[in-house]
Amino acid sequence: MNAITNSYFHQSIFYLHSLFGLLQIKNMNLSQQENYSVNSQLRQLTEAYMAKHSGLTLNALAVRCGVPATTMRRLMQKCPAGEQRSELAPHSVLSLVSYLFKEKKISSLLKKIDGPVAELLNRCFDQFIFDEESSSHTLDSDLNNIFQDKTCYLIYKLAANQCGTSTLEIKNIFGLLGLQKLSELIDKNLIVADKDNINILHAREKNFSVDLGLARDLTHSLVDFYKPRDVEAGFNLFYSLSEGMNEKGIKKIKEIEKDAVKKIYDLMSDKNYQGDIAYFAVVLSDVLGSTPTENNNEGVLQ
Image (tube, rainbow, N blue to C red; front, top):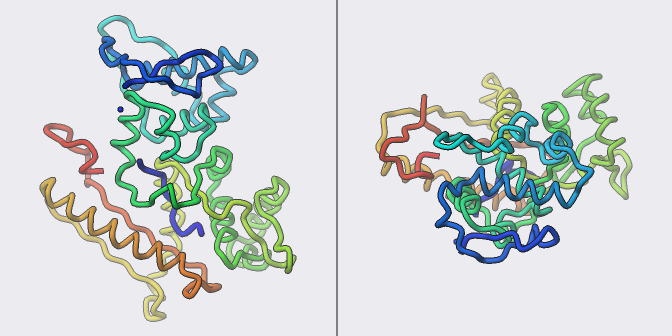
């Protein structure tokens, strides 16, 4: 069930016990160290990982974890005394540590790491409603790289539906370009034929997630499929609302949206309602313009 494109949600600070124990964090209070930050913790993790994998270059690591090489180089450069450098974007932090720990589930990842990185992940991804203990969605760095191509993403998303897709459907929607991208996905064994009907194609991993930054870009490709002229057919729905709000009001709006998405997700997961109509829903809200930072309770406005 890939109805949701999401990134996931859900302190003793950590100590690297040894290179062998890079991904087995031991409790040790490092919070008293001056300037101990997300970046410094990520730098320690990355340095230890690369020391253990001596043949790995920083550029190669960047490609594998899906974080831009320029971002990785900036991370590994220690700031001069008195200078502060902005933290990595939350989705980049998630992509990096999920690769270093070889763990795609945040709920499991947070059991292996603590400190500023864990605090950031908890703060930025607690908004997502799905309990990973009972969910099989995974964050796959390889898929994140492939989905830089929006056509590949849409084809894979169709194939990840319970009913799968077909070569004819891909041709009708995306033309010859779609057939070319489909062939590439098949060659990479990301899309496979149904064992009972070779004309039906399925995604290798139906329960997938992409990171927040990429999800934002890919959402545009989904919105392009909204057809205002087909409103009389009874399938689509569109509302756009805006107003000046305080933080209390924003929090309530988010609670309503979370509840709505949970109900939609449960409905899409119910085999009694699954069929052969490829259907999507997008729930999105944010601040129009720059996000306020003064006196802001982090996490409320996201």
